Amino acid sequence: MKPSFEHIFMNLATDLAKRSHCVKAQVGAVLAKDTRIISIGYNGPPAGTHNCDVEWPETGCARDSKGSCSLALHAEENAILYAVKNGANLEGATLYTTLSPCLPCARLIFSAGIKHVYFDKSYARYKGLASDEGVDFLNRFGVNAEQFTGE
Image (cartoon, rainbow, N blue to C red; front, side, top):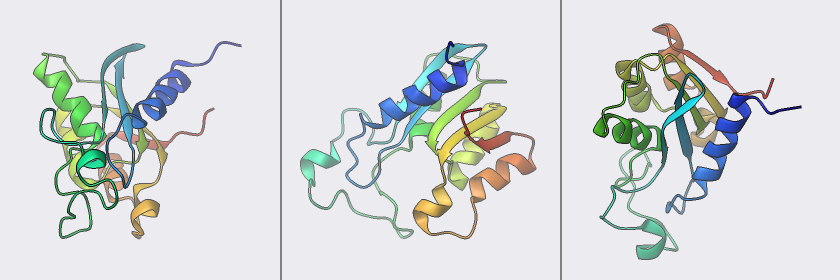
C-alpha cells in the first residue's frame, strides 16, 4: 500500500526537525499545496547568525521571559518566510509540523492564508500549559488544526 501524502509530509517534517541546531527542542515543518511541497523549515536562528548547539552546547541560547528561545525562529516561521521570500502563494496551503503551533505562529499561519494544519505533538503538553492556544485560535478562525493520527 502506498503511503498517503499526509504521511510523507509528516515524515519529512520529522526528518527536518533533526536538522535543528536547538539543544532544547527540534521541530520541523512542511508547507504543501495540491500534493506539492511549497517550502520546508525547522526551528533555529536566522541563517548566517549562529548555531546554538555550537556556541552553547550545554545550555542552549538565552531564554526569553516565557522560557522560550530568545534567538530562534520557529519551524513554521522559517517555512512561511522562505515561501514568501520566494514568491509562493500560501492561500489554501496545508502545514505539517512536529509540534502544534504556538499562538504567535498561529496568527502568522492564519494571516498567510494557510487553511489546514496537521501537528504531531502538543505544544501545550511540551510547555506545561493548560491548552494549545495556537490550535484553539486557528480552529476558532476557520483554519482546521488537528493532531495527526496517521489515518
